Length: 76
Image (spheres, rainbow, N blue to C red):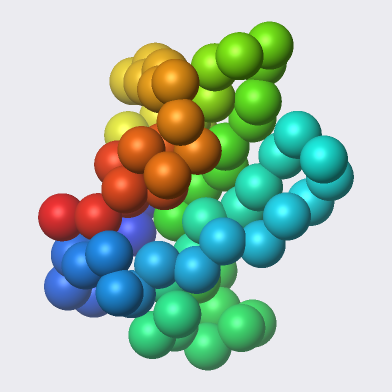
C-alpha cells in the first residue's frame, strides 16, 4: 500500500515501537492508531546494521549503521 493520503512526515511526526529486541515499527504519530496510514515501515537489526523497509518504497533497500539514522530515513 502506498500512503499518499497525508503530508510527508517530519522527524517530530515519527514514533518508534519496539516489536522485539531487533525489530521496530515506525509510525506517523499524526495518524489514528487503527489507521493503515499509521504504519510507515519497519526496521530490522541484522548484525551491526539496521535494514529499513519503507512501505511507500518497498523495493528500495536501505541499510544504516545506527538506529537513529534508520528512523530518520522515514522523515521528509
